[in-house]
Amino acid sequence: MASPTRPTRTERDVRIDLAAAYRMAAINGWDDTVYTHLSASVPGEPGHYLINPFGATFDEITASSLVKVNVQGRVADGSGARVNPSGFAIHGAVHAARPEVECVIHLHTPWGVALSMLPGGLQPTSQWAMRLHGRLGRHAYEGLALGPEEQQRLVAELGPLDGLLLENHGPLVVGRSVAEAWMLMHMLERAARAQLRAMAATGGQVLVASPELASLTYRQWVGDGSEWDGDLEWPALLRRLDRSAPGYRD
Image 1: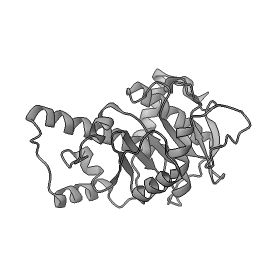
Image 2 (image 1 turned 90 degrees about the vertical axis):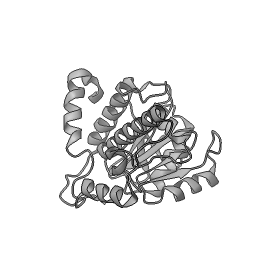
Image 3 (image 1 turned 30 degrees about the horizontal axis):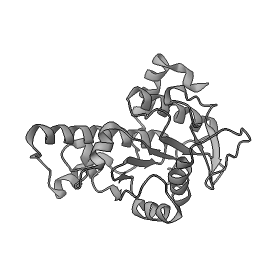
Image 4 (image 1 turned 180 degrees about the horizontal axis):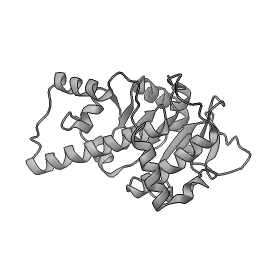
């Protein structure tokens, strides 16, 4: 739940942050032409969230171009915009099950997809990975379409966690803010790249921290929980994006 000291979010705030997250995902090479999604719930409108219009690339997304939809999969802003049904199947299910979550990110990131193929998944081999220690579940691959029964399995496997590795598919993370979700994806992708590079260099033999040490590092990282991932980094990331691609706020 949000801290009572945090300022109230407006739809405009969320639109700007989500558009920025799309632009930075494109810059990082996390996009997959016009597929995959970052979504964010609309403040004051339970059951509604913002998502990208289908057919737009991530670097084209602006605050005003985001489409408002409901968790039943219907466009709710009168725009008649086209949206990808898979965005409803995953994002709608997670937003409905986790109303305390502002942002859901599911991407086909290069290293995240590779990690999703490993039976052992993410291991505590780096500090990035230890931030996510014990916070990622797994969901078995069941094909392209997510029907109601698979949606139920996916949200049950997610539970209260920070995310899932969708096996043979890619990573999914959630956050109490767009900034938090984006930073979790950033750390997951960094951790996956470090682990897979080390495994490739050594034939799979890598140093793995003990569960006790990984848990200690996680507790040291999150502290008392008053500061969320992204609180410090997000303003700096927005300043950098304002210098390189300011049109996202439009």
